[in-house]
Length: 84
Image (cartoon, one colour):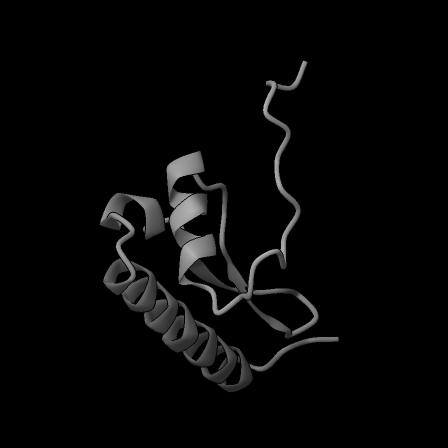
């Protein structure tokens, strides 16, 4: 499937808009700008739009988890001892 330039630009703009909103929301939730700069818009060859979150440092992942409207214990507790 070949994606037209117009369709690519439209899809890319939608993904970029959502990525920008997500970065702003996470910064307002207390994450550092350096932790959200890897959030990027992406358009696959299939024409699907994606927002790539990338890898997060542990402290940033904790802030992301705190920002989500989850009712504890919606996510499993980590063991007290380190892995390995």
